[in-house]
Length: 322
Image (cartoon, rainbow, N blue to C red):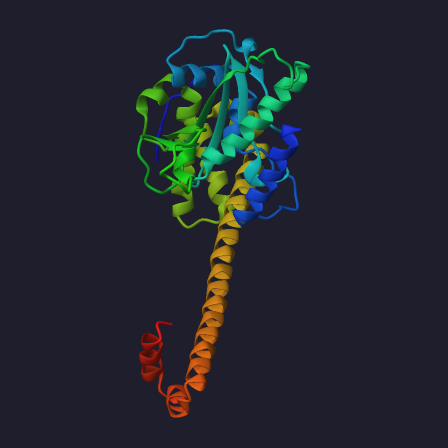
């Protein structure tokens, strides 16, 4: 296993309606429980110094005052997939951070929804009017996904909203870019060296996977990973003070991932069933059309033969361009 020395230290309504339609279209379903925070969010949400360190590591800055962070994370999302992980304003920048263990090419449209919600909240808080003549100052958005799934991914890539646009021949009037960073252990070493909490989180995930690979039950494997990390100074303070909560988050995260995989599988199976039904319906209509043509042309013998000879039926389909 890995080892490490211990460290110390009105428009909103429209967007919501669109979000609801998008989620339904994407095949997601409502979860009948409130989702607990995932460990990634928990680590940086409770430790503003760590969050500031992460911001500095990403942007090459050296801000020192963590109290200057204005946290604006979206808390009231109904769907698990639409729950915002971390959002804060610093130095005129609105940073939106998401953690993903599954590669998701739809992240740009999700960030678009988050961003609209965030701007609406800021405008309402400032008591400004979108219909006034004075321009409303808005913080510049920065959208980042921290990816640690098991699917191979580059050190960093940029996902674009325009990649989803149907008409590529027309220049779009809107674009949103998402920076996706691979935080699996061993990747992006410079970033990890500048943010020790992120580095230790990456190690913790890797150790947990190793324990899971040993064939242990999920809870036993996670408890073993927690114990190992505590003994080796990895996320020591967090695991010491919040061991039970962390275990609960990990078990919840495992359940959510399993749930989402099940939903995707169900969606694919349902799609296959619908495709078969549609294909059968089209086949029946095609055969009926052929029968009508043959009857109109008084080709009864051909109709009888086609009913028992699929190859001859296909020949007739080609003859009548059906």
